[in-house]
Length: 509
Image (cartoon, rainbow, N blue to C red; front, top):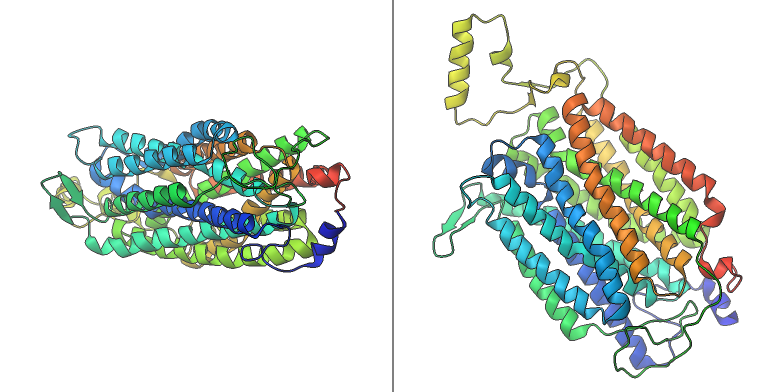
């Protein structure tokens, strides 16, 4: 214990160095396996973000009956699938080698991305095929629970914050690369090429999904060839996991006195739900909002939002690096509180104000000052035109009286959310893993991931409905209220959100 307390001042990053393993071979194998988990999280993030900015224009292209409300269901389908799968994969990983649920889940993900590339093929109901494809992609992404439980179980209490921050940095790097790849692949255009032999239309919408499938195949190979089972206690001593398979390692008892604070567990899940809910709202509404407010075309929205999300991802990496230093100085809970305050400011700035109104889509058709003959002629011209309609659709009544959101507001909000969200994200599940302590975390991490997936399911549906019917003022005002509730919850439960070993007096805080 004294060795652990003395090492608290050590500023080294455990991504590259270790100070608790006596067996050099076990240490190297442990960190190789952890890095595979980093890479798995990276590829999972790429697989999600590589299509997120193009879902809305692709949906509009393959099925004209789809509206912004259905977009919410398509985005939510990913998270719904993940919510169902996470506890199942978490339970599986508690009793069997983690290689099994990882390979199975990634294979499902690869198959679902290929399915997504063919959703334009059916003659009707294409939007429902996209919905199913995204749901299966999300089901495969349920392996995030396995990844988090593995890293939590394979690191000491001192290593964990830094390891979780490293994992989040890899996730953010995928968050950067995904939109950047989508933006780069947009040069293929909406038409692209058709491969008649396999009946595949390769364009700016399907190419990213196929690339994500290729990444998944690489991930499967790494998991099979490199990953090994490792588990350490809060002091960093090697222990034999429940899902142990034959390997040379030091074995110590896994029995730990004391119970897990279930109130802290529920609070952590609630906070994680709110944090993921907020970001799901942001990533869902970005493309429709920018098309409505800035009159961007589908291609422009994919390109520009891809660049913006890539910049936010790069910003997130810097935040993760800063969090590793700040949390050592001030603790995990103050960083989480500060992140929530920054997120509140980001959405508050996004509220519409001023006397400038958005461009109305087909405003000349709805202008009653035109004689009926001119209105009919304009409508015929619009329907026969090859020019894509842009602006805020007149059938969204709020477009006529809600002030426009300025580009400067949008970019400032992006910047602030890009600071607040990653800080809250990494601190919430780092705190959670510490609250659980050295006991097997697969099922608990499954519930945490399911909680986040539930947020990603409800968030898009919530914002697409509220935004479509009431507009951005109501949508973002409600989000500000939700962030306020999360801040008050954290303040009220502040003293209970402490590490298992600290709570039971095993380690001093």
